[in-house]
Length: 370
Ligand SMILES: *Cc1c(COP(=O)(O)O)cnc(C)c1O
Image (cartoon, rainbow, N blue to C red; front, side, top):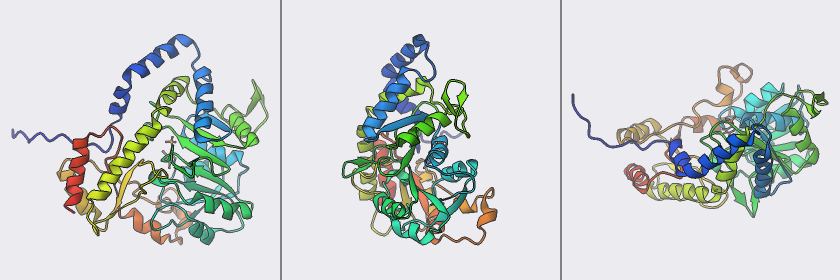
């Protein structure tokens, strides 16, 4: 049998590297957790909520079981109810759409900006109808969207704004972090996110006392206090105490990891010859390099080149929400030209803080040759 020349693969992501880099701290936290006798809604959980709120500069963080739950409960808590319409982008993986439909809401799609691939004031304005009760802005790939302008537009019209910060933990503009702009914000701590648990997790951030209180009730059966249900729509969506302990440790490293992600994408941007493609990023603190995404006219050719060099790739995301077979029926006549154009051209290349310099260089080499 032929022995292939052993070039190790550059993975799109390798979660064990981040886990093992903090092995001693994580193991100590696990031992404390084990002995504590508090496995749900204990002291680590409460402290994590307040540390995250301080980090984001918001009054409240309410920890939950996932980012999708955070989107759903945030929408319910800001006042969206069955039959209300929300507006969101169709190129962000379908999480908001799934969450909204699960809450009995109707979903309308706006197109995205050509450069940022996020909603902009212009694309939101073009898609608004009087029925829209809330706009969900996803800070896609770690890039803080034009959120101030969208908030101005929406608030003038009495529309609430929810930020989806699952990919943008730590991004900031003028000293304000992603999650501190809208009426409420959803975070995910899924293991691949910039701020990641070793399992599922999420949170809602908000300055609204009542919004936070409603999310707190909704995450625990609608209880106002034990066994007393005062809010309909409740369920169990709690963040485990162990995941809260992991997240407290990792929150302390978030800014440094985000800087490393940015520096990797900066290297890719320098390597990419003019005209070969375009990275969706910004060289500033309003971008945290969640995913390194290149827009390419000839994606399949480039993908094959990277794969031939043993470099992992992925596509975020290959199917727009309004073309997902589960949902498409309602949107047959809807056309979103920028979204549909991007879906065919986006390619994700490896970007996570523990990539080695050699690995980054191997990706750069292929990019330089495009
Ligand atoms: C990951 C992600 C979510 C969903 O988070 P889960 O914790 O997996 O439910 C929502 N929105 C965006 C943009 C995401 O990337």
